[in-house]
Length: 63
Image 1 (cartoon, rainbow, N blue to C red):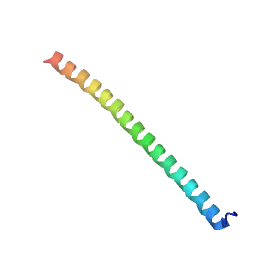
Image 2 (cartoon, one colour; image 1 turned 180 degrees about the horizontal axis):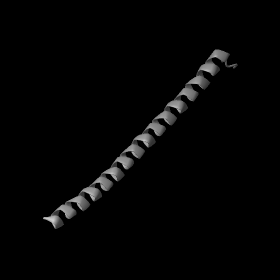
Image 3 (cartoon, rainbow, N blue to C red; image 1 turned 90 degrees about the vertical axis):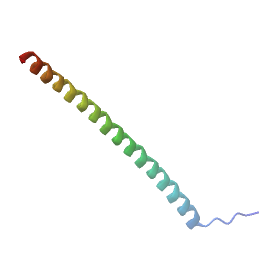
């Protein structure tokens, strides 16, 4: 029994696998970018809260 596999089928399969890997990598990188953005936002929030607390304590001391 001889399997008839055309070159076009092999090329299409390789391209599909390559595209699947590319999509998975893009999704992974997108998730990393979003996670980094959220972490930076949280750090900035903490810094702003610290500055506002210092300003609030200075205003309370001067009253």
